[in-house]
Length: 368
Image 1: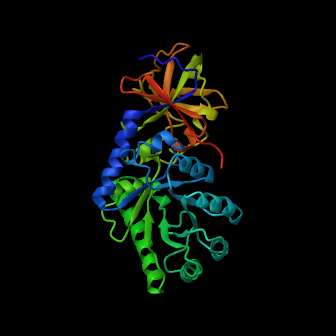
Image 2: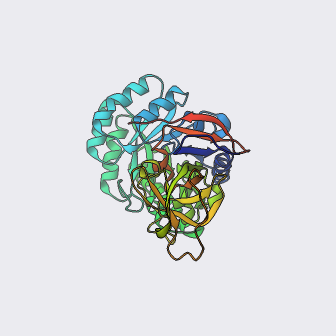
Image 3: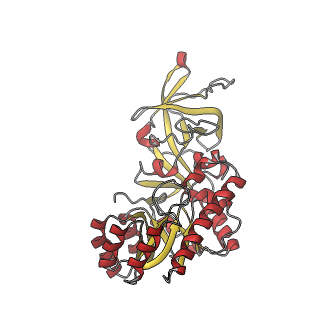
């Protein structure tokens, strides 16, 4: 069905989104753990209300603005999944005073002392793969941090995120990283308990490991975020297929550079973002894969370059086909490298129903 939106516009295929949601909820249930979705990608109450059959359950967020927005919509069990800056604790404490069980994360004694002073519960971040922050499970500082929290009743548990799982491909490799996550988190919990400290929650997760995990013994909850929408990075490491991608950017052909094999569109990096997450993968998808207006992939056509408001569509390097005829005014849809980054360029989702028509508009959160 023809779309009449002004471009560029962010499209969300609700049927694909629900299929993705149901897929991971089924896996979590089979593995015997609670799923705590990370809503940093979605940043939308309308998306959150479609999780877990509409129940306003446990969630993860990446900003306090998200926490406040989702709490206002009825979510009362929220993990703020970014290391807490002490200056933000007053805001976190204010949220807790309104009935929100907001929990923060940390990995050092300075944070722990600040959190303990304010009485805000926290989880200790565990470094399972050297990707970012966190403490190793065998670091003596783990028990030191844990004791500061335990003695003030603010220790909730441990959490980890194997971000390096994004660098490997295939179910077996993602299962391997899932076990790295599980082992690190469970060992950390055991170390705390051996020191006489309570550790009720053991939380793991990333989208690749959540889909690859085969055994989560000792884990209490599983986290993942981009799985609701998926993107080209996830497709490139075989977590999903292109047909699972629920987000796309609607754009319009605005010109041609025929001698160069270029088609110009009105979606540049301000619409697609500058994320080039597939550049290091086996297949470089440029700034996005090009589809027709109905979402069908056009073979070997990518957004090969992007300026602020202009995108350049061309055949991928090495392609043997010819450029399709795409007159000025033609609508195209671009599948994004990184759903989080692309969605962040927009303030709303134009939601597609099963027949391809825009059936609703869902607002997104912004800010921090």
